Amino acid sequence: MTSGTSRALARIASLLPGRSDLTEMRRDPRRNLLAGLTVAIVALPLALGFGVSSGLGAEAGLATAVVAGALAALFGGSNLQVSGPTGAMTVVLVPIVGRYGPGGVLTVGLMAGVILVALAVLRAGKYMQYVPAPVVEGFTLGIACVIGLQQLPNALGVPKPEGDRVLVVTWRAVKEFATSPNWTALGLAMAVAAIMLIGARWRPTIPFSVLAVIAATAVAQVAGLHAAKPIGTLPSGLPAPSLSFLDLGSLGTLLAPAVAVAALAALESLLSASVADGMTVGQKHDPDRELLGQGVANIAAPLFGGVPATGAIARTAVNVRTGADSRLAALVHAAVLAVIVFAAAPLVSRIPLAALAGVLLATAIRMVEVGSLKAMARATRSDALILVLTAAATLALDLVYAVIIGLVVAGALALRAMAKQVRFEQVPLDRGDHSAEEHALLAEHIVAYRVDGPLFFAAAHRFLLELTEVADVRVVILRMSRVSTMDATGALVLKDAIEKLGRRGIAVMASGIRPGQRQALDSVGALDLLRREGREYATTPEAIRGAREYLEYAGVLPTAAVPKPAKNSRTSEEAVR
Image (cartoon, rainbow, N blue to C red; front, side):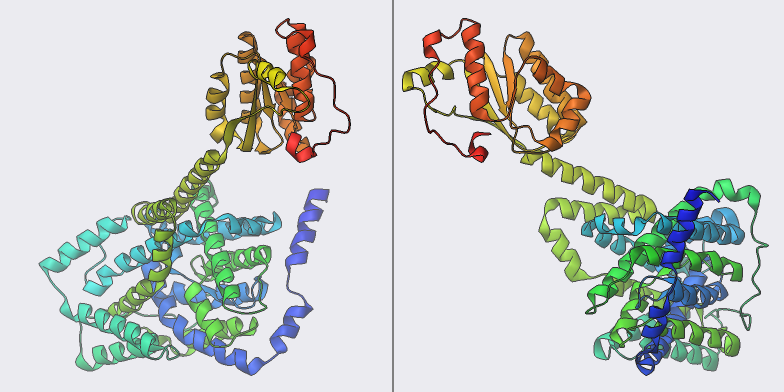
């Protein structure tokens, strides 16, 4: 066994559940049992709805909630996280189903699970903190819009039109409804959504989603509303684990969708775990272990016919609000759903699709935090732009592209802001120990510039333009002690400026170069160029003395203009560099 393999196995072993997890689950079990039961009641219609929306059916949603929910709770890095099928994942899965079929989705889920385990081994969880808040808010807004639009065919009671672009499908569904309206389905969907939204404001602790779905199912059965199409037959139990869906020949073509699913699962799960931490005191998730838990869950769920899963923000929030403080609650949630699968499949199969569409419409509306959106929009123009672009890309393209676009735009705007912080300004020569007449003579031939801030690729071009426009002097002194960071582009530009000014007969001297800047300057040869001419100095007074000596040697200054050092003259190191 190679050392790399040994390290990977040791890393996985360090992320596995330990005795402390069992100890935590034994603490206050009654409280966590109640929380798990409540979450299961809330999760049931969502699991059914997201299973239907994904294209694999309600049974796939239930299998995901049971299998992935249990394994993610056991192996994950959060005591509070509840995992299962989610709207964000459904948005990604719909085009995959359309292109590769159900077997392709299951294969993608398994591949995504392997990728998530690899990310956990590589300690990639910490990078979640670098996703800007406007990207997350725009991403959430876009997902809410897509989820809502995806439900329109079922809410309108029309067959789902062909296509994998949500805007196109929505338009076709609306045209079909206009041709032959199904007011029964629309009425059930709107009633369920209204009950959920109004009930949540009136009594947040009551699971109005389940009550609304039960009421809609009863009305449809009693009134014989055949226009309200039910879910259909559900298997009474989970299928036996199988790899029959796996097509080894298609793994190459499914790699890109698998990477997209893994990226979304990592992003949404770590975001959900962070939200759960913020809702409690003393809880802190392990991001790498959370990736491992989601990886194990997504490897196992397809074996039972389940779709890819992630941490679910809404269900996790319910879990926290009902008092959960250990993994026991999420495990109970999965166990209760398993009992429903085995014992109540015939009853669940009678739920109208329009009722589930109403549940998801209400869920989409509740995902939009108007206060957060307003805060981001008012913060800066850059934040507002990032939010709008991410939301629009989520709606028009897909979620992974949306996040990439948001991150790229956020990075570009951040670099632009950093580049504006770089200041390149002329500073007066220190009068030091020479007379006013001598100082005026030196000022005619020497100019000193102080560079403040990061000298990197985004600011380098402006620095080069300003520096090479220097005229009517013989020596330029660059005070570098306030340069906060420098990359290879900044070092190359500095070298280019030294050479260009040198060709014009202007000598460049540098003072106060920090140790952290030397590697970049040395790598492009700029440091050797300064040293070869003897023009690198520790402090600015030393650079000024070197400039005087250079001008004296060139015959520009008379020897008498060089003053004698004053005794007992002291200047702080920070001021003279």
